[in-house]
Length: 288
Image (cartoon, rainbow, N blue to C red):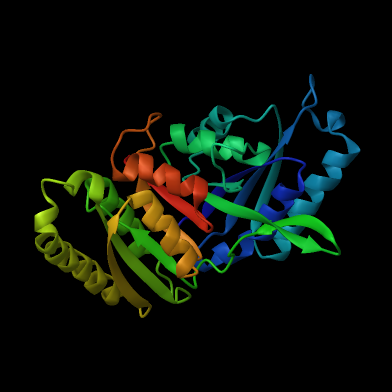
């Protein structure tokens, strides 16, 4: 779907894990990568000022991606911020951003994820938050991409809004022959239905089941992937996060407000909550 992406990184092991996981995105048509290497070095940003460690890191990331078959440009940026990533993506017309992020809640802050989570609040382009987790390596904790088989099982949660519709159209363009399974999901939000509309839940389920069925038919027109549908009643964020865990979802694709603020409706606050807490990577499409 997107042939070129911008990838902000730093000197951390998490960033190296992010780069190593990008090969599986070739299943969706990714061919070119602009790797931005954040540096805390001040002053002159020319090649002469790049430290030995930075040189080695940039070279290693470039080689990893080139060995995967990508066309790669690597660039050093002093004090890389979300605003700078967005500026570069706008100036150079790069349509897609990939950022590494760990799961996050009110009790944890993560260095790598800060830029990623700032991006989802300000960026008006599709952004993939590629989930990073720890694993045991020779008795030590090391980072790796979580659930990296992105084409194996995609979850598409929808509230049938305009933004969700745009995200669904984008999903259709992602459906290469490598995509094996898609789960279409709608959550009946109990906070909106209870107490005055809860008696009509069967009626709402019937209407929404038909909407999901229409989505399923459209997928069948372009893909041989297995398609399941799911309707739940509860808290949208919690239900989606639980479904990701229970069904071993590898990638969540959904709409997001993405306008620099979070409004209290499904694709805004819920999309951002899922981006923070989902065990799988999350691809957010803003209402552009």
